Length: 268
Image (cartoon, rainbow, N blue to C red):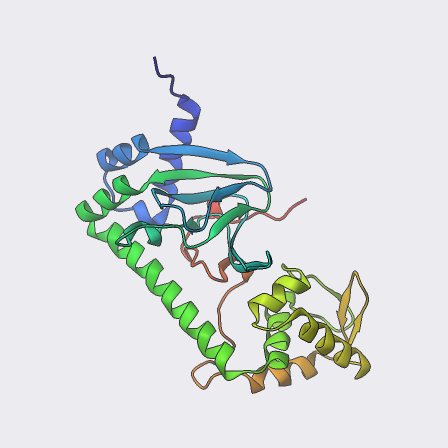
């Protein structure tokens, strides 16, 4: 006999109903999708999907934060993006000719969400054009982001990229500690430079009096210096850098119109 957890079942249905992608999907279709979905609850440090494995399902994130990564031959993490509430992991991969996960998806903190069967989601896209259009818009956003990222990487030097990254994701205030979402090694991989190059650049800026840096903390003393550097590396088509938004959507296009229940709440 198979036992179904009614609480988990109701959570899946509630999450689907609350998400803007399913606003025009009728109740019977949502219930059919719910029957092919399951509620996921994981602690920090877990792997949801692994790069290269067949993509049989995707994840709709309802709470918590995850990270999409690949690994270099020497084991370093290449961080492609962060996924927060209302965002999707591996949804576009479901529509490939041979669906495979493009990244390993790891939890950074406790996560809850819906694992949705790929075949069931594809079937509902065929029946509901509005849902299919949401998936296409999501894919288009990823293409736009990664095109801008490639343009930026090939139009700037390492120093300009590092300045732009600190400005965008650290949002420095003069003399205040800067909190970046990645380690120095991960930042170096993301920005296409060696760790030694990143350390050399930080040392150069420290000698110029533009930053104060010790092992645990970075402070920007001259924000305008970083702004001038970052502006030199911008592609002609870009006014403010390679990507919009925050690190949460860096590499994964989270829904801009996600309902309030999906917005991440500040920790108390």
